[in-house]
Length: 325
Image 1: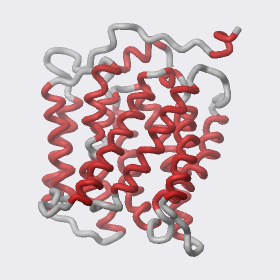
Image 2 (image 1 turned 90 degrees about the vertical axis):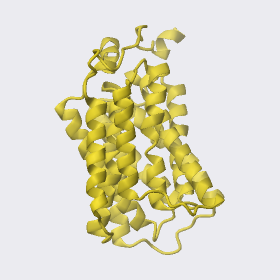
Image 3 (image 1 turned 180 degrees about the vertical axis):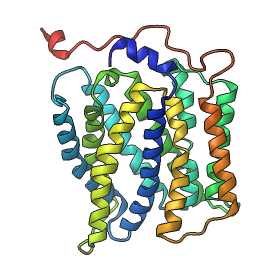
Image 4 (image 1 turned 45 degrees about the horizontal axis):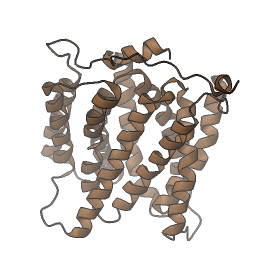
């Protein structure tokens, strides 16, 4: 992506292709919630995340090599890459540990506060500004997620509140990786390399966490668990995360993040068909709230472009080899 393209992406509306890709990503991530839940019966959470990242690395290298990506070229992205990798690892560490204290429904509601963190950070770091209409859309979509999954129960204790706080921290880390990928030299790196940093650096972070929490696999995983782990590594982590990074580098981070509100809705539907969880009329109302919210977020402002491009042109980073010469 050229510097000129990077600047214009702030105000670029989502194309039909980008919307279709986001729907596919959200569907995949919703199904992945069920896959992770099923695998948890045999593989503990941090070990599951570590194994997924280890298996996803070869997938990223293959995809990158097919596109001619030079993973080890000195291009000035190392510092930002290490930073985003730590954020990526902390995201899953906080989320998985938070789920040990709070319920899955509460966790899903609080994890999808991430678009709000992206919206807050987009103005100072990316030069993107949301108007009142877009903030209302975010609020409507979040309300829809809360209604679909269940309004948090009133009888909460300090342990559950602590788990909620960890989940919100994980949401903030997800938002931070989105902003770092777009606001640093990583913007000009191939998506496979950006995700490669995240996956590679997260392996020791999550592996150390698994060791500290004493996680072990007590018996050989079943064929179903192995198949679901392959799905997570090859398709979810290796492919869909790469597509997400590519979209973030091209379109408005705020608008893309708003679409992730659909993910838990797909997760609820997948749980209904796979795990026979119940569906209610409230789910239909929740879906309407999410769709209405997304319409407001992506609707052009009457005053002109909703998202303002940065006033200072960002230049592509000078390769380290050139700086060292």
